[in-house]
Length: 372
Image 1: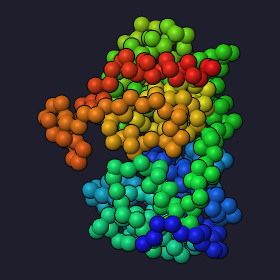
Image 2: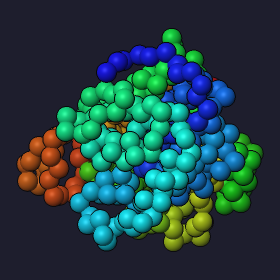
Image 3: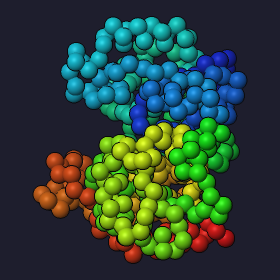
Image 4: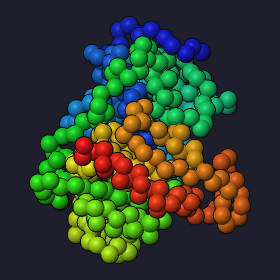
C-alpha cells in the first residue's frame, strides 16, 4: 500500500468507477483532470449512469467516454435491495465481460469504501486497480484506508495519486472553470430564459436530496425579495420532485421570481441547460446540493448553506468562490439523537439555525464583489 506512485508505462485506457449523483461527479473533477494530465494520450472512460452519458456527450473535458453500468446492489443502488428485484444478473455478467474485453490498463474505484465496489472492479480485469477500502472490503493492487468525514475532492485526488496522477502541485492540471460549458448549454438556457442586457441573475436553490440540509423555504423567499429590491432578477430552481418546494418559495415572495421546476412554465431545462443558466448568474444561493457544486465548478460566485461536516466534505479546492453559512447542530430537534454517526428517522432541517441576516449579508458581499 503506497501513497504516491510514478505514472505507469504503456497506459492506453483508464476506467473510473463513479456511478453516483451530480455533486459527487463534481467532487471527482480534480482527480479526473489530474489523471488526464498524467496520461494525456490515454482514453479516460467513466463507468457511470445514464445521466453521465447524456451530460458528458460532446462536452470537452477529461472524460473521453461514458459507459453506463447496469444496476448492481451496493454499486449505484442500495445494497439492501434484494438483488433479484433490483438487478439483472444476466445484464451484470454481460457488462463484466464487456469490461474485460475493453482491456483497461488502469481501473480506479472512486465509489466509497469498496465493500461492494472493489469486488465489482476486480472482475473487470484491469492491469492495475487502485482505490479505497474499509477493513472488511477486498484489497486492490494499491489502496488507501477509507475515511470519513474528509474533503471528497482531496480524497479522490489521493486515489489518483495511487495511479501516478498526483503532480507536484495538484492545482496544475485543474483548469478554471473546472467544467466546460458548451454552446448547446447556452442555447438551452437562452430558450428557457432569454438573456437581457445588463441582467443580474441570482439563482436560488431551496432543495436538497437530504431534507436535513434544507434551509427553510420562508427564508429563501425573504432573501429573494431582498435581492429583487436590490435590482436582481431572481430565479428559483429545483428538480421535478422539488416543484412544490420551489412553488412554495415563489408563492411566499412579494415580488415576482422566475420559477424553474418540473411543473412550471419553464419545465424542461436539462442539466446542460442549467449549466448554461448558472454560467450567466451573478450569484447562486443554495443548500449543499448538486447545482451549488456545478456553479462552483463553473466559477460562479456562490453562497452555500451547509450542515457541519458537509462543508468539510464539499469545500472546493479553490474556496474563494464560496461564501459558506454553517450550521453546527448535531442533535435532532425532535428526538435529540446525535446524527453525526447515525441518522435518526426525522426529516427536519439541521440548518435552520442559519439566520436570514447571515445569508443576506453573504449574498450582498458576493454581489458587490462580482460587479466590481
